[in-house]
Length: 301
Image (cartoon, rainbow, N blue to C red; front, top):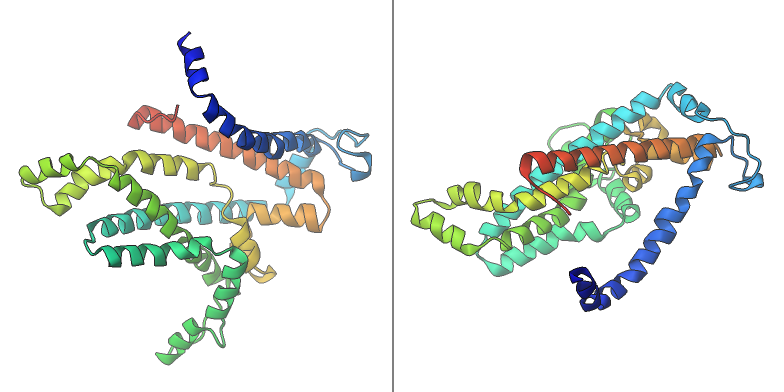
């Protein structure tokens, strides 16, 4: 009875959700029918449910027989873990520093400056980085040569390419994450700071014992969401910046799937890779949510 009353009272909210739910079904659930391609020797001429031969797990065996598969998986994990860890720490530190800033104009200016790169697409960002990091005309290499160093080919040398990906991704996204954490800080009850100050806690002690615990829910939520993207590593970024010369350090699962499926026309193996990646991502996000529930008593539902 109570549930029916709540439904009647919130029917307008449910109505507002319908377009998003419909889009989710059409673009996320309906395409899942294509999973069948991973178990077929798919021929587009026969259609999705046509007479393509059923091959079972042969496409998965083919994937793991590729000589570069473990290198690609390793690159993906290294890039993803580095981006998550360094990006999270930097975003939290930036939010804490902005929270301590008492000059309103300076605070808003810094927020705008660090947030702006988030709105730039990777296509445009790739062009900016290519100009900045050019070994001949780039401003970074001009600074290096001005102090007696030798030019560095950041986008074409395996020694530097992986670090370039990590740093550029953090530069682009940490501003958004810091704003999320700053919003979490503003939601902390000010009476907790007053009580801590009465007990003799300075700003550093207040940060350790009030601010960080108050942010813990948002930090855990962001980590859980990032765990689901552990095997993504940023296709848009890598695809727009890499070249065959840096496949050794920069080739990731998504770019390999693109080459297999789009460039080479191997639709079944590329679908198998995508299905395997989705399964592992589901496992990781479920595991992280379980740990958050058991160790930190955090629940989404």
